[in-house]
Length: 351
Image 1 (cartoon, rainbow, N blue to C red):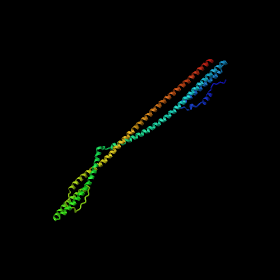
Image 2: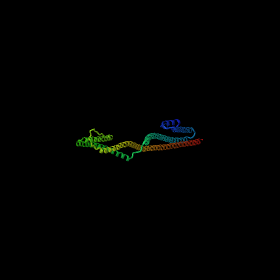
Image 3: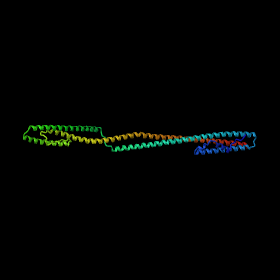
Image 4: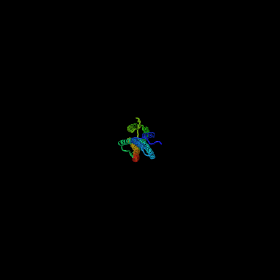
C-alpha cells in the first residue's frame, strides 16, 4: 500500500488544480485567504514529517501498521475537514463578491436617482424663483384695482354717449325743418305786405333775424352742426327753439367730452385690470409649482433613507463576514491544537 501522506508539493498541486476563488476577492480578504493556505501547507508538511519519522521507528510491524492506518485515517479526516473549510470559505467569498456587486449596483442606481431628483429640484426652484420675481414685479407696478361699480358706470357712460349722438342727429334734423318753416313763413309775409315801409321793416327784421340766425349757426358749428345760411333769408324767423336746442346740444357736447375722458380712463383701468389678472395667474402658477417642489424634496428624503438603510445592511453583512472569518480561524486553530496534541502523544509513545 502506497503512502498517501500529502507533501507540500502535492498539496500545492491540489490547491492549484482547484477553483481560483481567492483571485476574485478583494483587499484584506485576499491576504487572509493566502495566509490560511500557507498555514494549511505548513500543517500538512508537519503531518508528512511526522509520518516519515514514525515509519523509521523500531516498533513491531503490527503496531506500526495500526498507527499508520490510524494516522492515515486522521489525515483523511483532516483533509475532508480542510476541504469543507475551503468550500465554506469559497462560498463565503462568492457570497461576499455577489453582495459587493449588488451593493455597487444599488449605489449607482441610488446616485442616479438622487442626481435626477436634484436636477428636477433645481428646475422647480428656478421656476418658483421666476414666478416669485414676476409676482414681485407685478406687485410693485400694480395700481388700485378697478371696482365693479366703476366698470358699470363706464358702460352707462358709453350708452349715454350713444344717446347724445342720436340726440345731436335729431336736433340737426329739427333745425333743418325749422329753417324750411321759417323760409315759408317769410315768403308769406313778403307776399302779404307790398308796401315800402313794410318792406323796410321786414328788411330790418330779416337783418336782425339773420344776425340771430348767424349767431345760432356759429353756436351750432361749435357744437359740430354745419348750417348753410343765405343772405336772402326771409324775415319772421323763430330762433328760440333753435337756441333751446343748441343749449341742449352744448350740454350734451360737454357730457360727451366728459364721457370720452372717462372712457380713456376706463382703458387705463382695463389695462390695470389685465395686469392684476396676470398677477393672479402668476400666483396660481406658483401654487401649482409648490406641490411639485415638495414632492421632489420628499423623493430626495426617501432616497436618502433608502441609502442609509442600504448602508446599514452593508455594515451588517460586513460584520457577518467578519464573524464567519473568526469562526473559520477558530476552527483552524482547534485543528492545529488537535494536531499538536496528537504529535505530543506520538512522541511520548515513541519515547
